Length: 105
Picture: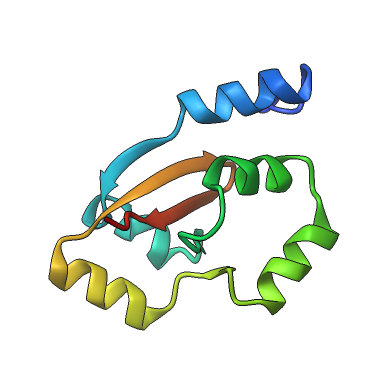
């Protein structure tokens, strides 16, 4: 993602994040997890809106989500389970973070 992500209207920023979000095998994201850069986003949240909140540094919202357990660093247990199950996740980049959201049927 470009460094000027915050440039543009909120709708343009959301559109850009949406276009840069894709399904990925968790195994492809393991190097980012190893560096502590993978952030779990609950399936109950809109990944695009969470990414937008991070991009505009909405600390208050992130603190709320964190306290509720809806956003957190990916845990060793999650990473291991996803690796063993060959899980596919939704992923998007808000430098330096990779936000990941398990796909729920």
